[in-house]
Length: 469
Ligand SMILES: Cc1cc2nc3c(=O)[nH]c(=O)nc-3n(C[C@H](O)[C@H](O)[C@H](O)COP(=O)(O)O)c2cc1C
Ligand code: SF4
Image 1 (cartoon, rainbow, N blue to C red):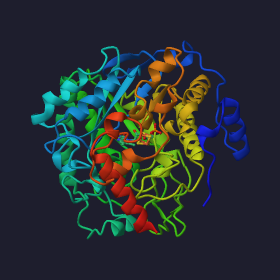
Image 2: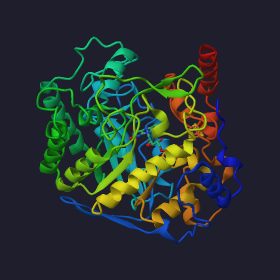
Image 3: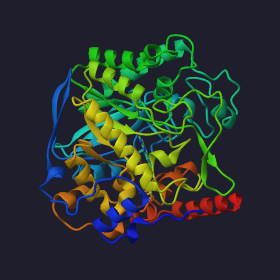
């Protein structure tokens, strides 16, 4: 198995640049990060209906759910702790986590649900943020990955031979057009609650294999919500237009898996490999063989996004269920996953390059890039360089925000980085919820490190290692 160079062993930006040259990856790296330089710039985005919003700097908290709401979908103290840390992070934008529009659409039994019962408690999360931060909430229905109770209850958008086999589906689980019509109403009702809670924007989530992402690629679906591009985008379009009509002062944003590959599986040596996917639908933003990027349709989708007056987009990739290495590049992948099939830096560079290409083609949209956490000590150096060359407008922080919530504040105030807090991509924040535990940074956040769940997590990892031998 190939061992890739660990980032923490590189002793400065120059060493990272040499390493990138050696492995043939083009990624810009600044030698030094000026605290009042490009990362401190404010960014203004324009929503065609709600107007202008000014974000005080270029750092953004990415949506990061914690599998830690009540089983009714209300926030707990753990959720509030996370949001308080977002509030004092120094990031100019907070993109609030996946929140289900209906209890049956949850990805786990502890995901937040924005129904009438929880509206006030979820509104309370907004008050934990800094009033200067621009904030929004991500609305979701998990589609194929619904798990509202202990056992999964998949509701795919279209058949998929590989995934249907993995999930032991009968074939009659696909959501009907009538169910989708009803779901539009649930999205609109939830978006009204987002507006009334005082958030600046709502994200109609289209990523990570969940329902709206699967619909974008639903070439094999018949009826009004599949087939051609018009049909595959109908659900998204209708939801956005309906939200506009109900709450014109609420900005609408979208988080998009800008490209996707076929499902990967654990090969004989433990390393990830593409699963042969003959007869499977072409992934949205992927080539017909499903192993590289084709941005033709994502570009078309972003044209539509612009026509709908949306000004804010976050780019991400793939799905944590089927090809996590393209979404969350990691040196130590989740214990139920596969060893990286490529240097994780390739995954980082792939997301950064795709975002840059889309941004160049859509100058009126404001982009939040993702996948930076693997850069570790050099996250600020690459962020600075990418923003300087116009590769993105904002730098999204995912896993790093869990281990090192005030990284942005340190960078913007010129303080040295706290090395002990830097996310080393141990993936415990993914392994824990896969094992039914709350998600958090068990290795580096003392609060989680001292929880009894840490012992359980160690046992889960041990069991998985034994099964894989
Ligand atoms: C524990 C965990 C929870 C996540 N929850 C969400 C979510 O609610 N919505 C979403 O769009 N992405 C979610 N993501 C993906 C992240 O937003 C981000 O795209 C990904 O971690 C890559 O960015 P990074 O390299 O900074 O971690 C989650 C990732 C992790 C590890
Ligand atoms: S558990 Fe902590 S160190 Fe590991 S990937 Fe998550 S945030 Fe990073």
